[in-house]
Image 1 (cartoon, rainbow, N blue to C red):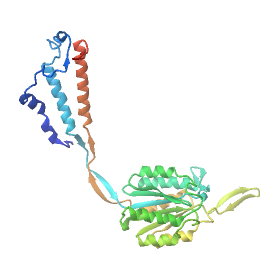
Image 2 (image 1 turned 90 degrees about the horizontal axis):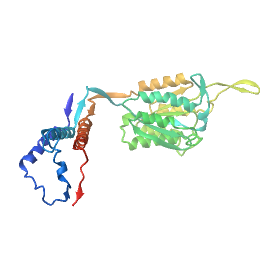
Image 3 (image 1 turned 135 degrees about the vertical axis):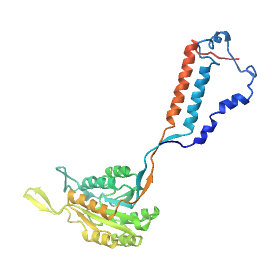
Image 4 (image 1 turned 45 degrees about the vertical axis):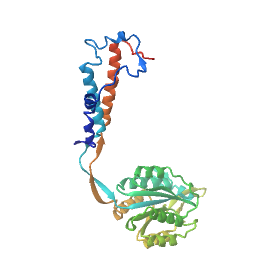
Length: 338
């Protein structure tokens, strides 16, 4: 439906008539600062067939322009059909490992072998896109740990900043404890309700750097009401060609699954193992079920502002009137200082 946000602005619609009706006109020659030479040349401008100063056409045009300006000032709007808006179910942080070991190419994606970070980005992008109603933040860590994106409803920005992350950006080592500590600080500073604090920690190794031990950080997270889901990244077996033929290696030998399991279970979460793209996708599906993206709905009506239409029409009419007056006069008015 259509509505006016400020309908009281229509009260000024008769203002020009009231001014003309009750305010006495000033003498034309009083304190004149300008004079028009050869005024006789303008005598025929208001003659028959011309759009002159006193013609009804001029008054009608000015009235129309004024009415459009007042209509624009009253802010016409179009109110759409009622829609439901999912309310936030969780405040969710994702901590992504950027250490040097994430360069290992043991994930097959669309027929090509890609590194672990590329696989993480591909699957996480879809997961983030599904979290409608959640605030999502992004932590990147290696030897150093930093908050790349604070909690926000702007999911496309989180996806973009995750896509721009590169291996080694935060150093080549892994500081899991510091990442958990930064997550605790971020959620606490944001004033997040303790029943909605969730951290998804993705790593492919063991804690090799940082000032905080992972298990101590996890214990503090438990005290603060944070649930941590840990995901171990990397294949169990990989065929490698060498001078002595093809041999099978375990590219995830450095993955500390015991610590990751203890962290998750100690905070009420779960530990998951991502060995390939399919298992990665399944993990995020399970997370969607464990941590629902929306807990409630609130109705709203989309509003589209339309004030620029009458305002634009008034501007075009004013310009057209000025141009038509100049053309019909046969020349542009020339004014000189007295």
